[in-house]
Length: 169
Image 1 (cartoon, rainbow, N blue to C red):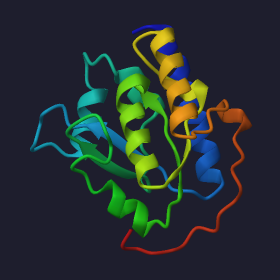
Image 2: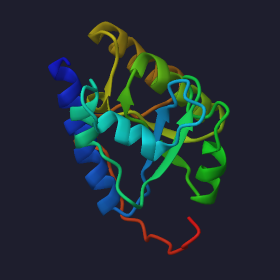
Image 3: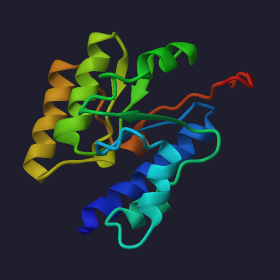
């Protein structure tokens, strides 16, 4: 595992803490790795087992009990998933996208979110691609074509939100 992944995971974990402190929900979106009978908890458990290359990242970014999750079959978090419905229930208009595969999964999710009129933030320090060049090109595309705010995560404005209490969510 190369150091950039661990550094990016640390930055995502810090941003997650800020987002939750501000009262906003966190949604994990992960590939199902072609395991159509899997669920999110099993995926996390598998990633925490030995020997899994993602074990250290999973430890850093382990979901909390009140986090939401969506498993996706392809690159975009919107493709063939209930994400759009969940975002509607949560009255979401702004998305902060983070993760690995910035020039693939993050880019395709951002494009689909843009086409659905979501405001986008893709912090430069919270995504990672196959190479620095691919990452820079993906960020440039999202900023230029999808109007994404690509400021580093510490510079993102996270106003407080009053969290609604709804046990069905």
